[in-house]
Length: 383
Ligand SMILES: [Zn+2]
Image (cartoon, rainbow, N blue to C red; front, side):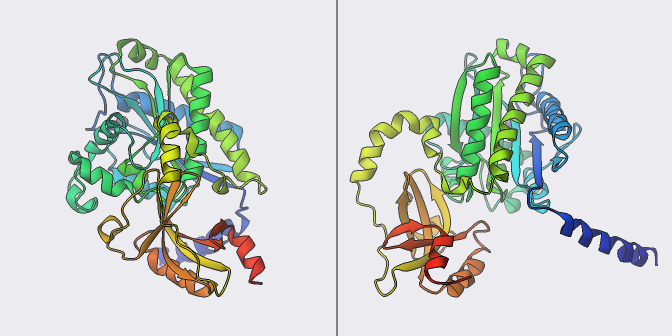
């Protein structure tokens, strides 16, 4: 009876809350890495799990104090062990608009120093792979990790390469947020700016919204560890991320500016130096960008993944899906399935594919050039 009553009374409240949700409201999930039996990187005087929790709480308070319309959720609020998949689940279930995972780096090279922010993707250097391997290794402390993560082996580089493909459908937004974080770090912290990078982090792989992973300095560096343990530096780190968030929020709320349509790929630190040499080789390389069929000048495809390096379009790289095609736009390889002139048919295909690629979305081409969906619909007189 009690349950029934609760249901009757609660249900209309839920509906009401949903209705009053203006599209401008945001939910941010802040994820202090590690916790409980998993200390993360360990320094001489401190542990990663404790520092990131302090920073996460500060960041939450900064956001809560500044904005009434932002809902902030922490994946842990104390020293408890939370599995990686649960962290992503918290963000997904709450329909978060942004996911920020907080970490402190550790390296066997005691001189390594500085801050870096990662987005999901294929690593471009061994160093970046090492960071991802280290952060992903926490699943070894989880029970049933083999089943939970589809046979993913944190110690196997191949494992990292394969799952790095199924990255961020929100790569641009993630890159944008990462860039803002690093800009603010560079302005406010006495730490080296190592830039924005890409690597395969399990926790970013499983979230379905723009997601970044911040490595705010090295605990293995004695000087930095000292700094990281001062409330002044912790506040500066939290405030930098808060500032980055504020700017991200502004763009997010401005309907005229579509972050998704912009390209932030040039900010990737590893690519920055490499891109000057690879850019020309990318242009020279003959990429089989699919030509549209000629009956209609507008075709639709379902985009399932992106990568900064070209991936072979073989089924084993794409959850056994055949007929994967690739096109290159703004130096990012974008992988698609299907070719339809009928919008309803492509929507159906997208819904079928979303089982394997939850973030897949429809893209439109006119005479082989990518155009916005709005533009395509307008030309085809679709509402
Ligand atoms: Zn960590």
